[in-house]
Length: 97
Image (cartoon, rainbow, N blue to C red; front, side):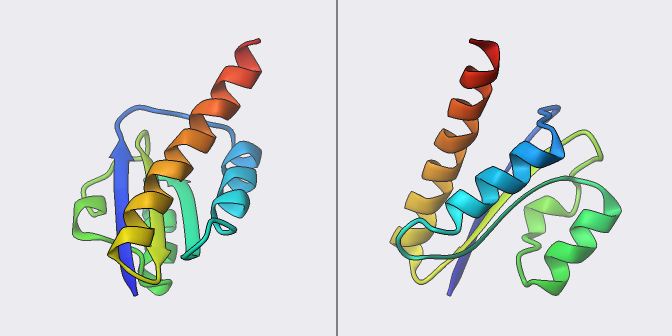
C-alpha cells in the first residue's frame, strides 16, 4: 500500500462536503481509503491511527485542509489524489453556481 497526500493552506470546506467527497474518492479504482479533514490535532490523531499521517501533515494547522489517499500502488495513489482534488473543486464550483 502507498499513502499520498497534500495540504491546502487556508482552504476550507464544510464537514458534509468533506465526508461526501471522501466517500466518492474511496470508490476510485485502486484507492483503498481517502480522507479529507482540517489539520486539527484530533484529525491528525485519527490519520495516525489509520496509518495516513504523512510527515508533511504533522505541521498542518487547524486552518489547513489535509487530503490523504491510501492506494494499492504508487500510480493509483497519485491518480486517486488528483481525482480527489478534482472532486473537491467540482463541489466548490457547484456551490458558487
